[in-house]
Image (cartoon, rainbow over all chains, first blue to last red):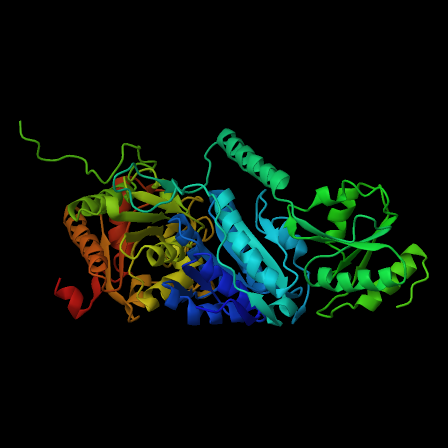
Amino acid sequence: MLMKRELLKGNEAIAEAAIRSGCKLFFGYPITPSTEIIEYLSKHMPKAGGTVLQGEDEIASINMCYGAAATGARVMTASSSPGYSLKQEGISYLAAAELPAVVVNINRNGPGLGGLGPSQGDYFQCTKGGGHGDYRVIVLAPSKGQEMYDYTMMAFDLADKYRTPVVILADGMLGQTMEPIECKERPTAELPEKDWATTGCMGRSKRKISMYNLTNEAGEEIALKLQAKFNKMKEQEQQWEDYYAEDADYLLVGYGTCGRVAKSAVQMARQQGIKVGLIRPITLWPFPEKAFSNIPKVKGILTVELNSGQMLEDVKLAVNCSVPVFSHTRLGGMLLSENSILKKIAEVFSLEVRA
Amino acid sequence: MEKVFGKTRGLSDTPFTYCPGCTHGIIHRLIAEVLEELDLIENTIGVAPVGCAGFLLDMFNCDFVGGPHGRAQAVATGIKRAMPERTVFTYQGDGDIAAIGTSHAIHVAARGEKITTIMVNNAVFGMTGGQMAPTTVSGQVTTTSPYGRDCVLAGPPIDLPKTIATLEGAVYVAAGSVDSPKNIAQTKKMIKKAFQVQQKGLGFSFVSILSTCPTNWGLSPVESLTWLREHMMPVYQMGELKATEEVKAL
């Protein structure tokens, strides 16, 4: 096992955290820029008493997760955008059958085969469902190596707490960058007993795991039960980081890589006496609407994304037209800089800012 | 009076949902009897298909999992890898395993996954109303081959057991039928051997069973049995297609 603080790629941090979260099974298929996850686990998980099986494709891998999750085991799969698309059917079934699993998406740019550069183009797909049917999954967005590690541990607990798939959404920059990681031990969490798992019915009545309905009435009952769970998640699990947000006149909103770049932009603006703050969503679903409930001083918001403006819609819904919301984006695998954010601030809020 | 026959403990009291003359019910009973005879009911986790047999989760007395169409073997792989000491089997129609699930059928066999798969081949997609399947025979009329299966257009049918038998990890491959008492008895022996192979951890075991679909074939139950003998048995290789030396020694 690793020592306390290690220099790891973000992808490796996710993998190491999975092992230390008690995940004994990983099913996946190689795809850049997420491949280090399956490589690292292939090397280290067997030593920790686990199994890594390379599936014939992404569809097989997510359905292997479904089977393992049905036994109550902690299980994970990882992929990048095109592969994440292939997993959608399985994720919908996991959500329907209420099975816990952790699914990592190291977002590359699309649509189609696209390229390997950092992108946040899968925001809609991850947060709005992705697969068929009316369901939601918790989506966590780390912005640095340590969070790749910490949020993975959190993902396993949330998955077990709510019997739901949990998605970790990062990008190639976060996955490939090496940073010192404190490999913390798993925090103790009070989690419900898995008294639903199909493990063989020795000494108990038989169990089944499935979700279908033969009458519309039964379908409605199941759907409402699921929605009640999603509403509970929405109420209890919103997480975000405030960065100089409390006294801000202008607010940036960015997650993941953009959240990180935006912090530099906040510092540069503050040095010039302009009160810029940042809200960095940690949960993309549930979107942290509560973060926007008490911002009377804010004159305007600028969202910062590596897509054409997807989270922008959730921010607009959260502020409900009380503040003007602008969007700053860069696409196609290119990173945006703190200078470009400052320029955009100057432009949309008619301020004198030196980039 | 001495009781000479009873319903197997492997089946629950949930009524079957199958049409008159469909042989799914016979196949369910054979599997359930084998599980009871090998004392495996409490040790077993079954994986259901999507299709007519999608409701068998309730009909068996062992734990059961139902997932997406065609993915039963991938789901079973996950279960088996999580609990290697359990008996895991999939029950799948020909549409489920020989069309949308073919990649898993090949790779489960190639990996020698220590699970058992029972494929029920009735030459159509039954649940959706009798469409052409990869197993539909040449000239067979279905709702999506209304002029009869044209093998120039759609290709000839797949004999999946023959394909699976070529893969090293598949150690027992058999094709049976439940159209007569003799064949029912023989098919039960195949199912039993397939589960014994898994108990011994020898590799992947696969039994394909020809079955009738009177409703979608548009025939009476008795006519369906004749049709199966005349039109399916000549197309699909029957009997034990493959048994490794270790399996033969069982």
